[in-house]
Image 1 (cartoon, helix red, strand yellow):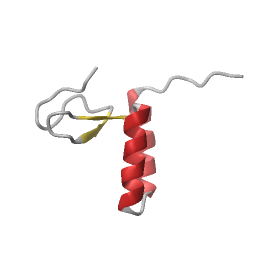
Image 2 (tube, rainbow, N blue to C red):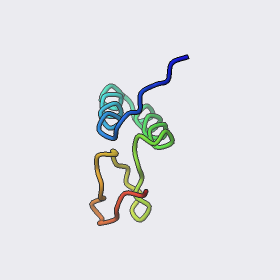
Image 3 (tube, rainbow, N blue to C red):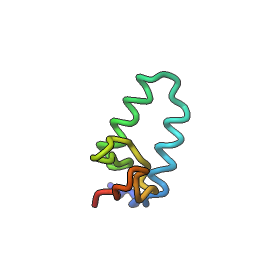
Length: 67
């Protein structure tokens, strides 16, 4: 069995962006966002609860991306 190549933050962000662009309902968007957060393809700011792509290092509220 071959191993999958490691994806960098930019590729993970692009994958989520493409999936979310194809979502047509709020239910689909919410489901994709939950999966992306759990898979580590997005991160959630704990102070303000906004979701961000991995290419974003800092939230608009000033909090940094968790390690």
